[in-house]
Image (cartoon, rainbow, N blue to C red; front, side, top):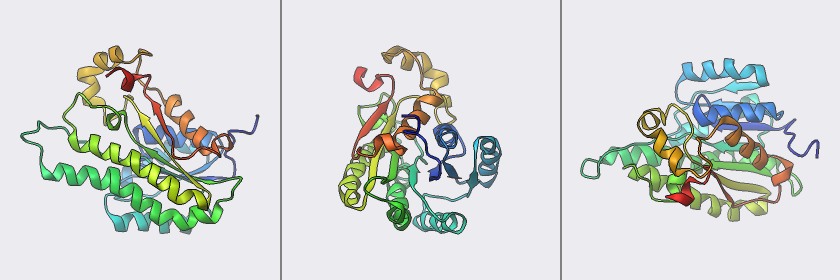
Length: 256
């Protein structure tokens, strides 16, 4: 049991790893012993996060605009140039958009679906040679997609493209689990509820009390909640888990 969650010797890629849930995930993987590559669109944000995370372990930062297919493949090439192996891919980068139905623009559908749904697929495609190379029956490689409770139950906010993209990502995870299982690659989803992040800052400023009141456990998510779940899915403890969707929401989705 003392080594069940130990990730020493494993390399993880975390997209959207410069802030919010991605930063929490990256720190958790580092503390579990993994080497971590973080990526996000802005160079300065990547470097700031790298410096912040460096005290926890070996971390590399590679900026990339993952809403574009060619950038997904460029990121994979850049990781290969620095690391001989990749064992864990965490597809966390995401975007949201809120507007009344009468005003909701086509650009909001394109922006959100490109990053939230298409990018995890193209990143999986780009890293597939690396994940396949390191995978064994007893020690499978891992893909972890970060979905949302908004893809499980109808949200109270007008975030149509976001909710649809996350529901699509949940099902894409199941499709990939069946496709990649014979290659000894697991694919699972985590559906977080509200966490205190930059993306949620404006919403929580206005509605934090409402979310807490709706959540059976009576609080927002904290870093250990999401980091611990990712470490579990990355570890030997979850070697026989694939196609699963784990909600990390304090019960919020059950109470909507």
